[in-house]
Image 1 (cartoon, rainbow, N blue to C red):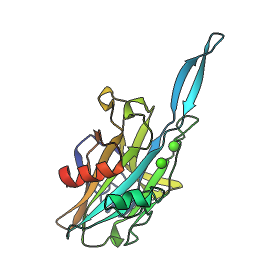
Image 2 (cartoon, protein in one colour):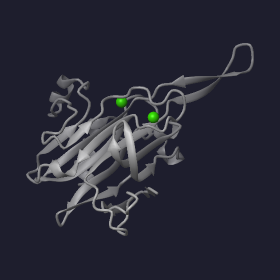
Image 3 (spheres, helix red, strand yellow):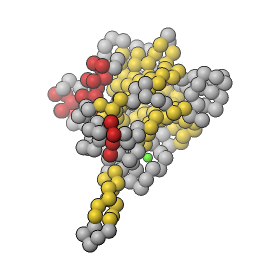
Image 4 (cartoon, rainbow, N blue to C red):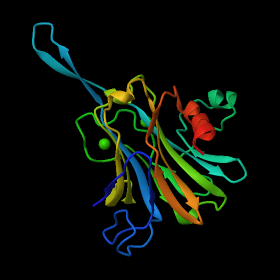
Length: 230
Ligand SMILES: [Ca+2]
Ligand SMILES: [Ca+2]
């Protein structure tokens, strides 16, 4: 059984023998895993002109990104190559890319709609992580999501984050998961700092931060992370 992460919970990456999080059982350490986000399109009931109701679906474009902070105050990043490079340059940020410089982190690419036909149980955007390949100067890796559109998390029917062993197309064993529930406190929040991997005494650990923030876009989220979370 995967553990259900609570906001702010810290876990180490030691596995139980069934692959889930937890120190007991001698299942080794998680080194290759995926961080995925699964979310749904918004369904709205609209009144029909001649009476009755119909369901109207509205696509939701969440973007999963991450930044890797190095011990020399530089950073590496995974965010969409479709963000306008001129806009990024204006604020001093490099163009988007889907693979980290060390090749350890890979993004599955942009999903622009979410599940249009209800929860398919599969993640819509995924970053695969190979901790054995990470540049030794990387100290913290933050995962975050931003909604490109105007909807806040309160209005998105479901959004789930999980860490699992396997590949983007095959889930072998879920290590931990985190429900981004439709909570009234998420009203007006379109960004979420999901969690961070960080190194302590040479071992990688994970902190499920789970903070929904009022950042208007992903650049604001990066600035927020560097200022308030590292
Ligand atoms: Ca997207
Ligand atoms: Ca899905």
